[in-house]
Length: 236
Image (cartoon, rainbow, N blue to C red; front, side, top):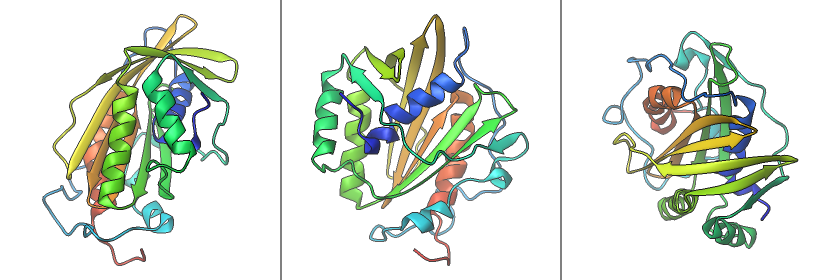
């Protein structure tokens, strides 16, 4: 199956991210702790449940270098999404893609994204995606993606001419927001492997997705959720 662009919340983006930093025996990258100056989920005012944020408003809530601290460099944003990702060996992902192709609940048009490299290492990346939609659509859509990706012990992903074996497992997520999902994905190709963690947190009508080296994801998820969901005076 060809992975639909809206499912890039998960597999397409993660596969390319993993291949960029794939090194023999690589696992996770250690990163600094997140700043203590940011508001936690229990502090400040958060996005009301009924508010849908535009892509422009979401982009203003993305992490930047000043939030992350020393050692982080923003990566140039890719102008086009990949359409050459093919997945095989996981019926749940086949079914998911079919639903997306006919305009199912995984299509979140309000979105923004950014990615960073930490410490200059290509295997030390962290990416953030923000989405806004109704609570029901976000809950169902994101939950189905994570369930599908962890429903098969392993499966194959073909990115252009590169074949990658993916092994997925559920992971514990910090108690943030209204709902949380997390998974660890091991990407193996040509005798090399890389582990990517992905954590998603829904607070009202906003979903924050942080992906990349496990240590960096763990360090920055709370900051990303806090910045994405605190009400600001800028436009929606």
